[in-house]
Length: 389
Image 1 (spheres, helix red, strand yellow):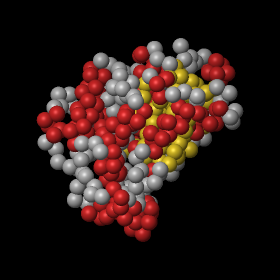
Image 2: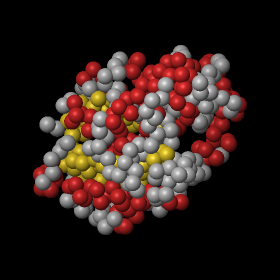
Image 3: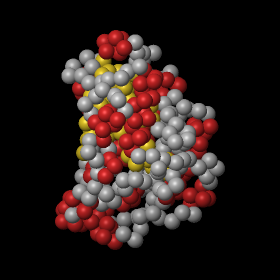
């Protein structure tokens, strides 16, 4: 069975703080709005399943939000909410692919949602965050500390990180001005753009920022116990080279070829394959790159065959490492900016990146693209797309 993406929709990304553009919008409302948009664009009113990624499944994001949204939006689908931290949205797409590819489902809605301003990070209180014995035993450090660890191990300098931060802000501002995100965007509550984008940011302003993750002696101590060979940890990442937190949602309509033909839909991209990977939870953030390497190799391709990379900017050091290791130039890597500039909405990010990948493949007339995310505790997932002419 061949699996296609037929439509992609996503909200703008609002700043995750009081007064942010989506702070007064519940995660349920975001999903309802996107289901309405899918219905308006495709005429589809039912699916064999609806799979939504969400990293903090409590309070307004608890109680199987996917099924709740299907019910309140009048969309006929069972609904399942999944959690693999930051990769939740892309893993929802991976699950939809597996269901369609195996013949178990014909049409699936997949994506993710996260309202960080309304349901804060770590508010689910799981042992990986809240039990000191578990934290110490597995080494579940803060993601920013893990990013500084990668920068230290890989030998990146502060100036290189700042230069990447400037690049992503500049490209994001240019992309929004050129309307490159319009294809999938669904305005919500009068918000029509990603709020974190800062046109006119300068290298001098980035260089003036202090380290964002210094002074956390307990976190540094965990790194020293688990990675004593590293030596002194250099705290190099700042607010300007770290992903900003935001509120957002994204959904994709995924289905088989025969199902799409029956519904009168034109496929936009074929899902060639997917992959997931894990690394130790201290190093943590390199798993997304490993998943990319696996999905490309599994398809019999090389990194040079991929023309569009949408890689979640889980801190600048991870992007520099990715580009260096896979020899991916700036003309193929996050060409419209990334999550450092536009925001990271945990469970929603993967779905937003897959949508951006499909959009950019069409804009360029390119063939292959990859979307990938690294997540907490050393997880990472990737999806490989082929544009359908």
